[in-house]
Length: 321
Image 1 (cartoon, rainbow, N blue to C red):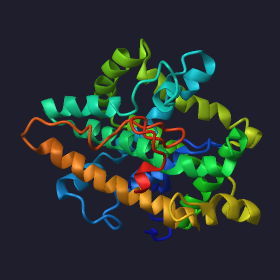
Image 2 (image 1 turned 30 degrees about the horizontal axis):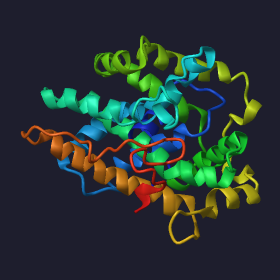
Image 3 (image 1 turned 30 degrees about the vertical axis):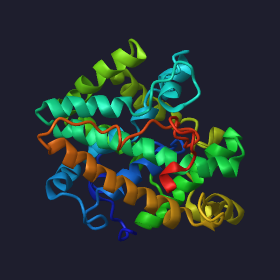
Image 4 (image 1 turned 120 degrees about the vertical axis):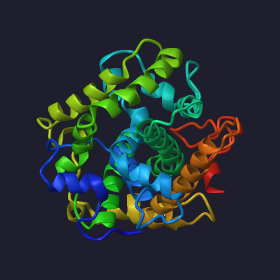
């Protein structure tokens, strides 16, 4: 599942052409989310998707990537207010939480009612990928960090940098991270369609918040963050600069929830998440185009994105079965 040097589909082609803003820092975590969606939509890696779905994922990849960080988009506004919307999208223990599959199911119902907007569909599938990636990865990161959020952040920084390197044979360039924002804005009609589909869901379940403001604030925060550089561990290191002990602890020998063994993060976690998510995309798409009236509750259960626990059954690591 490794791309050729310099590969990386639309996102990286656009970057090499000099498009997209540059900055000098990036937060931990989102790169792995974007890469999971990117690799799962790569026809040289996943060959089992319906051809029409494959075309949609390639054509609308920027919105797939937008969806893949969707539950994290409110985080910047949350940091400046007391809204805690991102927490309500992730945390299974909050009394004000909203089931994590709510946005996915609501977007599905909208698309099912027709017509199918391909940008919205790509966003939905990216959002679903974010939720399941968290359920795959966070139990492992939590087992490593023991609940220490600074260690958690550092682990995700190492994993982001190393996964990107293993897939592309390149270190993360600063523009790699932010270019997807600019690329979304290059298709304003499609971006507006995504916001138009998402905003009523936000209003209904989370109160009066603007998903457009979340998007703009997320983008602005990282532009400002270039002045912070390595402060608070927000900058991605070059892989060769990562200490061997950190690579072993956070990447090459991570605890696995099966067989009580350790495994390699890229091969045993990242690739497994990609395979699972691609299969789920296929099931969601086939159900969507089926003329029968249906739902996807059985495909997208409610899970705590912080610890990987199935909220309904209480079982952790349930996606590893």
